[in-house]
Length: 121
Image 1 (cartoon, helix red, strand yellow):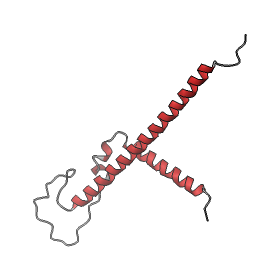
Image 2 (cartoon, helix red, strand yellow):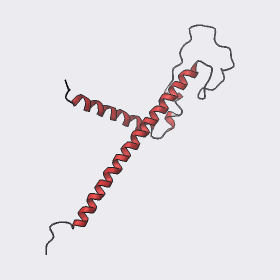
Image 3 (tube, helix red, strand yellow):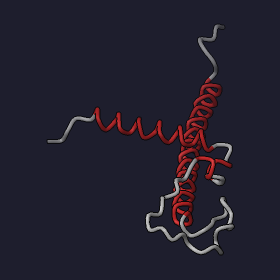
Image 4 (tube, one colour):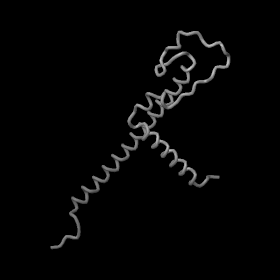
């Protein structure tokens, strides 16, 4: 008696395992995308906070030493630039750089897909 392959139960179990693996990979991609979007939002909110508070005399990153001092008299206020070292909250995430890279890769893939589609005109 010769067997020509694995039993039917084994094939069904393998197919079920493959479906479960594909579903898990889809969920992981969704979670990765969600994390990247959340970290991007934190980055944007942090940037707007730092921009808004730069001229007011203080913020949680730079401190409030200048808050009680009178504003400078010169009219030409130099806009303070936000640097990566000021971004305490964004860069505190262990996955921040990976999320940004994944988001950029996803956007590049979407652009490549859109550019390859035939136009509907």
